[in-house]
Length: 281
Image (cartoon, rainbow, N blue to C red; front, side):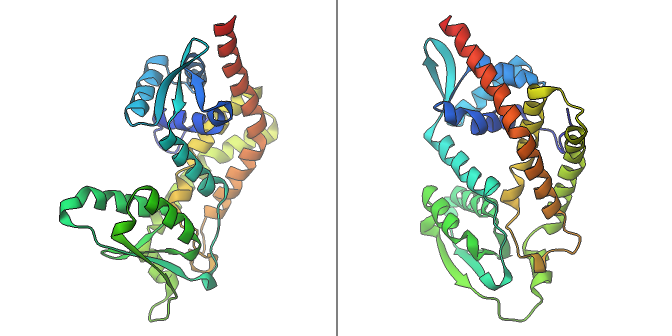
């Protein structure tokens, strides 16, 4: 078992588990199976139940019985969030400098301050950087995803989107360091590498304990990784810092995913199947 780069809340593990294993089972997991899976991650039952309740209050999980077994299903909102996450986490795209840029120019009335907060949050998670107040920038390849997200969250009425090319007068690499917190992202990538390079080394050396440990390692890896692609706009390599370790971190994630996906899936499926068997027996 590895140490996470930062303290991981139980509900983050639950979101990862539902994203990986619930959708293929109709979006539903029994309470007993979910608690067993969380216990494998060293999260006790009271903490797991508390996290489930929080996700239910946020409208992400819905209580539902299947064959008499209590459990929770993903809400339509949660499915949309997970589908959006799949696109960014597993379909990462790196821009080229010749692609150009996408500008979001917005203005939100003071009477709708909460919408302003939501808009800024969505733009940040899409990968936009801040040029000036009300003017945000992203690589052009995020154009379609930006349109879809702004429409989904009913924010399109506040925003104008423009395709743009940078003409003058500064150095784009230097400006990128102002528009995005590349130093902060570099640190997060470093924390991921420090935490999960030893995990890959254990698997390469064969110092592992089968499917259960694969589940443990993969859920922790994906939970730590999945926010990073949302913070990384996928800038062209030419304008990234010379010692940029995002590529190395992405390679590490891909290698762990390739090694751990199948055995982790076997373990999760066995636990979920046993829980259903106990109900129907």
